[in-house]
Image (cartoon, rainbow, N blue to C red; front, side, top):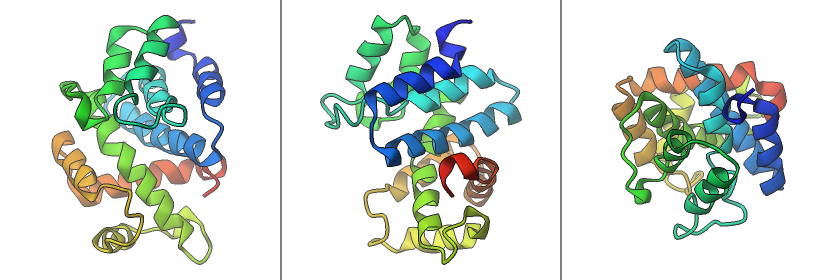
Length: 187
């Protein structure tokens, strides 16, 4: 099996470079959302999922904009990941200048910040269960600038626009995708 479609290999790589449980869960949450879109669009599920799984694998070791995701791309290149895989990852950070000119790049960008935000909304629910999270509660929290202030609301909105989906539908789609993986996400 080729490494770009080998989830076990990619998960092992993620855990080799990322020790933070919250960052690993973020990768899994983004993977859940991207995986669901790959199924919806009848795309290469394994490939898309692994791009999502590894999009931030270098972030813990190289958190600065000067290094992330550039160092990750170098590491992946040295391990044999192809240019398209690496460019897809590069595109999730606006500052890299990598155009989001494929459906995969648009989906990754649209799901990245939103998955983190949905996780944060879940944590403040009384039950801490994603099954209690609704679109209206996510949108209400988006208006609260003090809540999860590191998450870019602009990126969430732009991501849905670039993907060509209604924001409410996109939020619901990602809640549903993450709900199906709630055990592995701890939600």
